[in-house]
Length: 304
Image 1 (cartoon, rainbow, N blue to C red):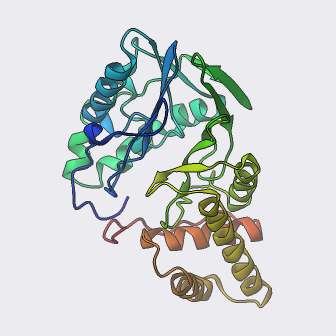
Image 2: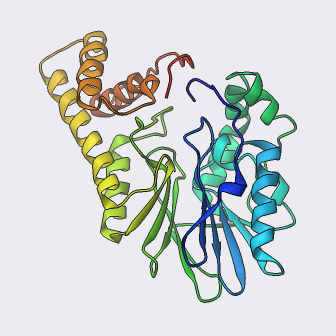
Image 3: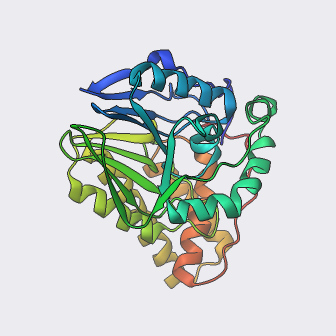
């Protein structure tokens, strides 16, 4: 959610194979377009994220069916946010929709609110979300679920940090990890509401680092390696230490807002999504002090 200088359209024709049977439709560094995965085994094809709205969902579905042929289709979402999961309704009845239980609960609880928030981001986003309906999964799990697509094993793992129901998708034999928005490449992380947690986010990144993937597919941005996971974890460690020190020195929240933002931007000059820096600061402050979260006003005028 930043400055929307291009329509949020998934370009399925740009899909590329990053390993045998593993395709990624890249985000093109476009606002509200995630990196989408299509993983193919001999028996079934798993789609990772459906995109923002019906038209994007149809683009992903068309590409997935082109790859799958007569094979069964499955769909999973890295989290419930609209640009990742609000194209799901076009898959209903055509694919088995799977998510962790926490993500399903969060969708049911917050889906309508996030639909309203995203519709207010601009006319192109509003148009993309026209006619969208909330679609609940066909199957849920808790903790971890292993799927055999036929000669290709996929592990779904429930984590938390960006949302309450984040999910990673890991291919252990290929060493490929789809992270959703728990990892974005050189973009400031988004801690939007009270269910986002820098502490749990660090724990999630520790889990991902232990998997030692060779290829990391972030929610947004270019593909990376474990160095990308470490970079994001180091960011959270730095911010928590900086804000904790300011709290111990007795700085008022208003001063922390100003000074921590300056230090963060100076240290991470090449990162985008600047509008989320104040949200990071407020979320970490609330977590460290045990006080209710007071989020800043969301302004979409800042560029990614």
